[in-house]
Length: 118
View 1 (cartoon, rainbow, N blue to C red):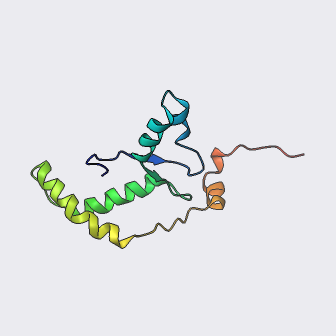
View 2: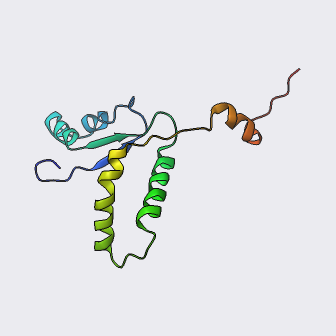
């Protein structure tokens, strides 16, 4: 929250790309572009692994711990999410990626192009 306004959260796939450049190249003055830039909350996806898989894992965990019963309305759901989120974030679990590039070449062999040698 900044100046009483909620900041938009933007997911980026790579830290290396300059997300802010278009703000300056479009029709914004430098001061306006800088103000917009300060109002964005950027989140970068993990370097290894799929951020979508991580999101799916978190939804699955939430479902098992919080949605194992009927929740009557959106207000109750909101309270459940608010109660569950801080302890879950405090745990800071990592993801143990076991599917390596070598495994991918073996298991997804049919998806890789085959070249004739000789």
